Amino acid sequence: MDVLHARPGSRSVRAMHERYVVTNGVRLYCLEAGPLDGPLVLLFHGFPELAYSWRHQIDALGSSGYHVVAPDLPGYGRSDKPDVTYDSEWVNACLVGLIEPLGHEQAVVAGHDWGGILVWSMVRRYPEKITGVIGVNTPDLPRPPIPPVELFRQIFVDNPIYIIQFQEPGVAEWVLSWGRGADDFVEMIFGATTQNGDAFGPDVLEVYKEAFRPVGALTPPIEYYRNLDRNWHLTADIADRLVDVPCLMISAENDPVLTPMMTAGMEERVPDLERVVIANCGHWTQQERPEETTAAMLAYLKRVSSR
Image (tube, rainbow, N blue to C red; front, top):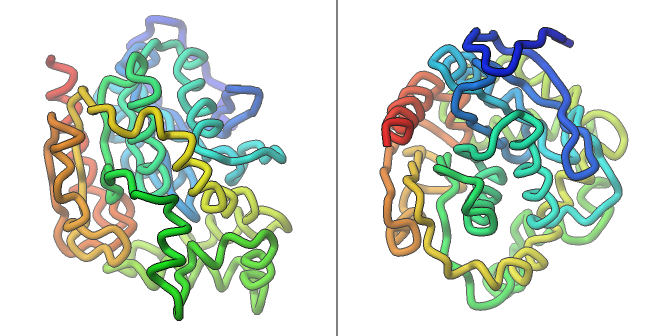
């Protein structure tokens, strides 16, 4: 692990390195780059991913003067995996809790997939801490009339989707242990939803396989799904708040899970919104189209920093 330290106020630009940060009583493994006194940008990954998913963006943003930190989300990878309820309120408290020990008062937050779900509730719960939001694939969706899993059960009666199948504790873990276990699961999920298979060569897939092979490693990430209905109740008091910071929505043309069409109407809840659609790109945007994703993020961050 890189143990280099820069003095507070240092403008020296550090290449990507590893570190741990303790927040909300848990220790999070992080990848970090850039000057410590640059504007803080936090990058949150999705399922079943890691901080590693942002590897293409971390050095690029850091070398552009931003203090960039991407954690393994609580319960993932090398971060702590406490036996707690992984609802959005607890997870977001951990993630917002990174800001102060990293030496900052505020941050721009970016989230892909599950990370995207988290940032849209985060900016509403902690508006004084968040200066901007980048949604990658995951739009800010209107609050459904009933809890989401309950809604899915009504819609997908004969062919329940994976979110429904994840709800029973232990069942998904048992199913995903068949065959080669995590190895088969990782190859299936990245292969099925990408438009650019060359982004996931054997070396890349091995990073994810290694993270999810240990017994119990999949349970905390799946617990995020098991708290979807709980999150619906926990966010009732903030669901109608307008997001009053400048935001960027990056969509992927060929994402079969989170389609660009799902961003329709976001301006009603996120008035200061810019949109970018990346062509020939599946679900794993920042890994499939890293140059385009990074360029969109840097252009947005430059505009936000100039305000």
